[in-house]
Image (cartoon, rainbow, N blue to C red; front, side):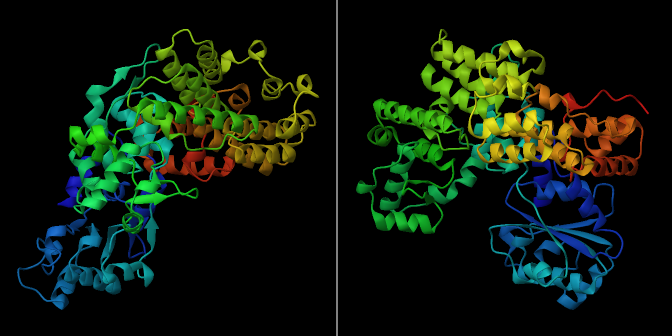
Length: 572
């Protein structure tokens, strides 16, 4: 069944992660007065794995829709029903089932969909219904939530932090550029991500002095990759295929629109195969489309369509200049840099000057591991590049709080971050001067406002530090808890950066047992794993975490501090 296939795909060696709260919600839907729940989300986001974990250890019947049986009445329930049955009879037979999981409900035949709807109306059977977003769903299934028969849990793709943990569990530490590339290619599809990782595992190479490994080179054309790119590979119209191929070989540069057929472009756009941005640039709609189309083209076609190296050089210089201007304007929000990313992904060396600017930009954003990776890319092509060596040192200093002290100060703002704003008086402007002023006055609300402005400009690490400084400045405990929550949430996006301001995020308000459980939860352990390690019940672990959330002003474990910033917990 699809259920078993998906569960196997998402299981070992990856642990269940990032859906603790959703799993508990699904479990609770099987008890009390509730009739069940509908779980929806994009393909590959972990819906089946979630419900698998939720029903583990329970007596739950299972059924699943399949593409091949959509025209066969009651096909999804053939193993639970007699060979010939009416809808009325089917409802009576399955009303005796206490709990029923219906996976891939968007693929149900009409009779099976009507059966599920009637079971929900009768309310005797607890239903777990799983459907994929972006695909046609039988009306009888969609009415489960639109008609308010069952509540709906709409899953979003797993956060990047949790997805990174899964990749680490499956392959060990990966360099930031490899991690970013896999996340970009998979777009939250965990099955595709697992497939890609398996295909490139043998191509991972050690990164010197880091313990990490990197993947550079073409995207492997696995079965899952071909399945996701079938919409472009199936286009047989010669004009459409020529247009798609030209776009594929133009990546990562904007295509020459004057030589493309506008009518063909409009058709491809309406089918969701290409995208047009606000500046009129046309690109393929999925990052996998280009590699697959290039691989499917013959040598002669590839030679005719490929871009000349000098075109990439000019585009790389333009990207570098654009990043430098944004740094000068104190605006380091995410911006498109396809040329540099494409060259590195393909294993083509990039100039040291470009790599140093990329490292500087990433470091200002708080992406310290990415900053170090870009600096190493520059040193790979030019081992003596002083700017790349300096950026690598700065990234290492941010990544290790013990290394960031007065001797590392290279600009006045470092003094503010280290808690010595008096050394920066009169030497800063804009939001950085406001930060120094608010810290000098120990003004918690102003520090939070500064943090918000820094976050809007893309300075995530600096924003986290400002919130952390506000924790100690606030007189209102509730405001301090809010600042701590924001500091932790932002710092978690900074790839493990551990600066002095962040290392001060202690959990003094928690009991020893709560600190111990929070430490393990922040490290990625599930409630069940924590319970087994500490010899507690799962319910007790959940209660301790709930109390910790309340005391810290956190909404879920995603806002908890990570182990490096949690005081050493003693057994209670």
